[in-house]
Length: 178
Figure (cartoon, rainbow, N blue to C red):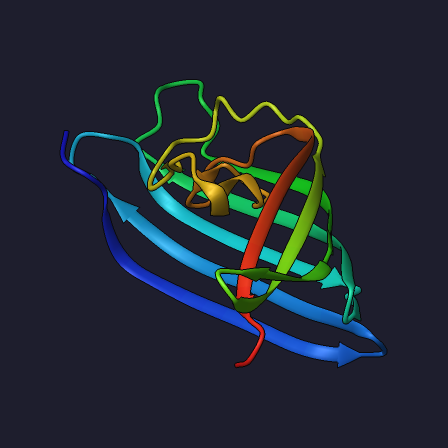
């Protein structure tokens, strides 16, 4: 199947750290999707977020809230189907890491070994999205970065529902001399 053409796409991304101890970010996007055989239309996305990073040399905790808003104006819809629709979903995540260190020796070389457990919680309520067309969205690959992200989809046509906790563990060996 031929993919949709973007005619045009405009993106606005903003980030302002340390505003009254919070970090503010925003994603805005306008896209026009064109296809000769399928439903086509305009999508507007606005996704403001606010996080409160608590950073210490031994740990980091970052709660974050956001509001994912999307509006569609569609052409060539089947008879009886809506030509305009919108979706608003609140998002919440909590990312936390602790860093433990210990000095060790191996083959007469000094090392510092770290043990870094990480917990990541995300909560996004369920919303029926079956009437929303899929213009440019797909499932992401399962990998280390993806398990610590809010949305398992790329693109903005789908936002997963989630009430999940992810746990990970990293260890590092650092040269004690350098």
